[in-house]
Image 1 (tube, helix red, strand yellow):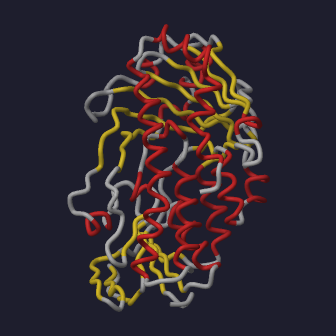
Image 2 (cartoon, rainbow, N blue to C red):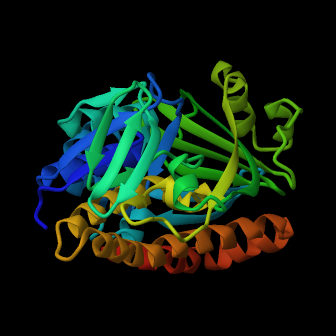
Image 3 (cartoon, rainbow, N blue to C red):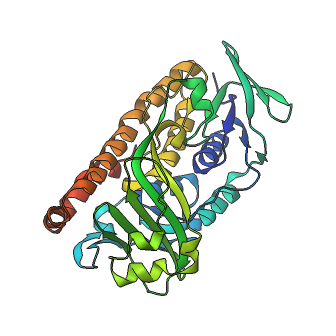
Length: 367
């Protein structure tokens, strides 16, 4: 088959827009639908070097230069603000890309501007039927269409995942998190994390005088924490307490952290990408990177040789080890939450640079 394949992309988050862009640029016929009529709530993002490399390959290099804040180091502190380690981003991601911070809405706007296709908003898949000749799709607006491939990029609570594997479940990863963006009155100029016992507070510059704040709390059950957010961090450094006193903190977006580990990913003509396939704890900050890498590799593979089913299976086999690596490293990092702070802090003081080199070494290479 040639590049005349027709593809439906379901979901217009980062993974979906990236996939539609990559597929369209390779000459495939692409439709993209999104059930929401407004973009989802978002706060900020830290994009490591491999995420920047993938987005640049997709055509967003200039947008990142214009809208993102360069992150030159990651600073690890204990809850009282005492330094544990500094990680040099230029050294860690040498030859890969400059790590940056950016707001979620600016990244999505840049993706949409770069797309070159219209997103059909307020529309989703109502039913689909696969055959040897493709996939017949019925949409929620009463329309229908025939496609060679359907790409499920509909997020961690993917409806298409239930079609791919009805038994695939989302796993609670043991954390509740809060996200908000506020003014950078503290002048924080690097990715900075304060580590407590079962509590973490992260601050990342995401543009001119703007700061993305992320707080999380370990909980055995996925129930919302009833105590006000500042109370969980009342014993933290004054910079954390000051940030939590900002009006935006009171309106923070609250969610549980979830993981998707089912490796099935596909039927004959339906393929999952991004969080729909392999959602992970944010500990490795790889959500955007894995989604955009998925998009680029899917487009490359679908333009290869062989039957469609063979190409989709080739894609799955190529991507699965890398995404499983990210999930395994994230789980290992999350497991340190149960470590006594004194031991954890000593380990980070002595070995943080080696830990980072180990955890991200595989991701420096092209996927």
